[in-house]
Image (cartoon, rainbow, N blue to C red; front, side, top):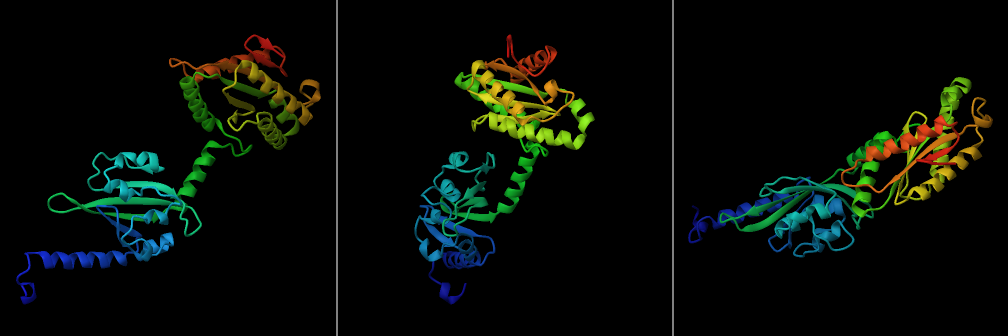
Length: 330
């Protein structure tokens, strides 16, 4: 022990030196980092954090207003939840987070942040970990941040592409299955009707053989755009079910309302007036099957699809270019 350390409590000088070194080290880390004390006041707001947020350390050190770097209204950051033992609230505040049962070593979450000083929105990967003294008392919480906006946008685009049809630009079968399941659960929970239209282009194989694949693709694109206009509520889902078959999911609409939408669809296709020498009246037409149910807990979405499919089959069997809803024909 040096002469200047004599008379001090054992270890005090060493700890202070270590703490000072740690603080200085954090200031120059390339990773955006800030540290809160046990009361949620900012102890460290490093230079990388200043660059990430546009918020200088001089405005937040010693305060509890670090949220200003990320949001335009007061709300807890991840470090606050750790410091206040409110980790159970993460799912309500963050877009994604780890489900680890042992959070004594910290937690990880991801979120879109407003970044008001920069005037932009960033998707941040966030880690927050507690620091305890030898007796287990919380001393501080360290939060580190990474900007993964580019990766998130690329992931979102891949997810979008995986659920949308590349030719028509509307939802594909995968997206249809996911959405129908979601709407089924909602309708079952709220005891409201759910309707489904299954739509098939009449004699489409003949159309392709007569006019060629490119003309067939143009026909599909025109019909997809026409269906989108006919079912105009934001809650309605228009999907390419497969090949020349389309589907429209109509939440909170009963059979009567679904027939009205089906009639609009049929009329919209007629107005396109796409020539088809092998079709009804020399034009492209569609057959439509309509089904409507109030979902029950012991039923599945596939049963609604089966009902609409049977109605569509009947429409095609009796001559096409018509709408069938169970026993109702137009």
